[in-house]
Length: 284
Image (cartoon, rainbow, N blue to C red; front, top):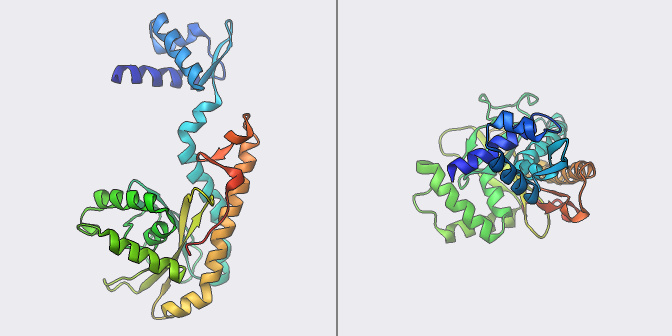
């Protein structure tokens, strides 16, 4: 099985080196027997990862290979869309804001406006792994998820966070936390380690029926400057609007990319979800 998989990737890498590769060139670069190579190419064509240009010219990669990088491309596009909008928020409100996404049981900070805020924290959180259950990022994410996705996320978090996660996450406590976040309309990280910062977060979500959580936005502020209530009164609406703008602009960017890719309308999507159904929803 391992050898078979290795051969498949060898062929894909060889096809990726040039727009069109002849069978003879593929045999030379992969060093695979002709019967094996022909069989693998047939399978790749049937799966939509390659196509035969002609018997003389050879083979080329098909649009199907883009499905293999959908998740990575989606996160990159989300960051590209969010960065200027987040910068606009910080220039107006002065406080730094960070965008995180859920990956393998952790929240990861993908971009931040730390460099623009005069009140930024001392350390740079970019690419930092953040616990799910205890953080504003994670709580915003869990509150925006469907129950099924939330339960899966909590299990992944418990497996990956080790000592940072509750010893045995209680589903009732998780659901009670989710209810508080939804009732309040935002999540809070409550620190007990002397950190002077508090964090308030909301989720960037789409589409409406799949409850896909694209990411989470968190604004950090000094609790010596304003209380949680004051922060919510002054900045929550703007943070929600920022989340909605990011989701809306992300959908438009996906539409633009999809229009450049050939294929049926119902196959043009962002991360596997039809773009026509995408919208912005806040954590509430």
